[in-house]
Length: 214
View 1 (cartoon, rainbow, N blue to C red):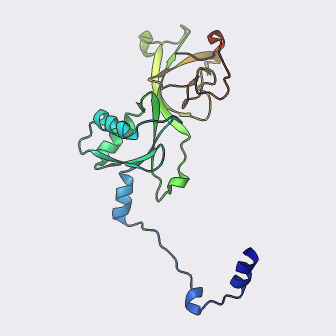
View 2: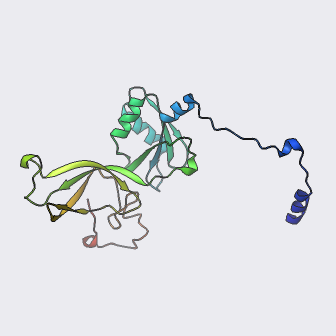
View 3: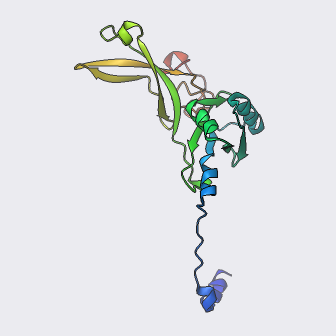
């Protein structure tokens, strides 16, 4: 059967019109690009079942946007919120991170005419609080020993517990504490799954040997 098709195809002769190549131009009109600019890619970082309808309802209530939002379903845990004002979109991005049912919500701006198959989520934006375990350097005239800042973490790697910096030639270890961190694996340190759902854990786990905790 296969060889029969190959023989038939080799003997097929195309007309001049059939041999012409039709070039499909991408629709990059200003109106189309403006619509895309008001959209985001959205993914809930979990492999477990969740109620997509409930998630959309919760997000709309929590965001409380001025002009509202429509959230389109694209795939199993892939969505695209369409905002009706740049201000509402910026608010959602600026107030990131968001979560639903203990799972972190990944948000990303759309880069031009992307296809859903090209979408990759490698980072999650979190607020991090660091505690300075030394007395030599006091921030803000000694009023605080901690500072909060927002970072993008690599969701494919374990969470960092400490960071080593050098101040005036002296190496200092700084403990890292995460603010509003969603569920993550206490054994492996990765967000997106819990200890119960970790493939690297088999049977009961001695909690005293866990590197991570609440």
